[in-house]
Length: 260
Image 1 (cartoon, rainbow, N blue to C red):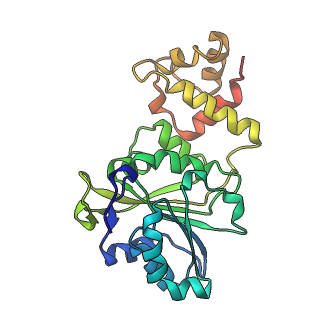
Image 2 (image 1 turned 135 degrees about the horizontal axis):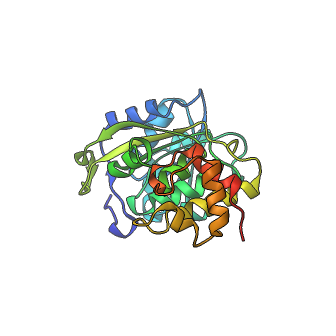
Image 3 (image 1 turned 60 degrees about the vertical axis):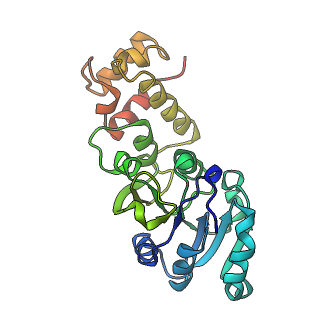
């Protein structure tokens, strides 16, 4: 199987790594799993060996015949469903019941995939992703927050599971990877859809200009008086920057700031 650069393909070649990913996913018995980009089927095989029911979505239609041949018995038994499609066009409501996302995803659509499934009307119960190491660190380990880390933490609990060296892939990428698990995914952090929308409006405004103080960024979207009132409610210093605020503090700002 030849990897296609246009699809950001880096095939996982180490069976032990695939086993560790399945273990890190903490999947319940016989769970329904959505896998993005099965590629050579390395991770697919370990998911099936663990007794999972897998729906595998592969964007590269050229890989489907080989996968259908390799997993002919599992397809016939109904434990594996193979579909050739772009995951970015996938309708999560087509999955009935609870499901978990487990995937080795292309680096260039990492943020897009995370956002797509966390904000989906039918969210996965958990997401276990093999992604660029630096991105996993930014989400789960950095002391300072970012637009990405807050967007994840407001829906679930991220955990940096383990590092995967570049040599585990073919072709080898230029950077190391890591497994990130996002557990307990839900919308319980919001009272309603309006608050969910406003939260993202507020954090996007807050991170609009990295070099500016938070107050100045917010004043481009909200009145100076409203920002001052919100800062007072959150007990914030006037010179604080967006990256220094915790998720709970952002929630306070969200309650206090209203769209003009």
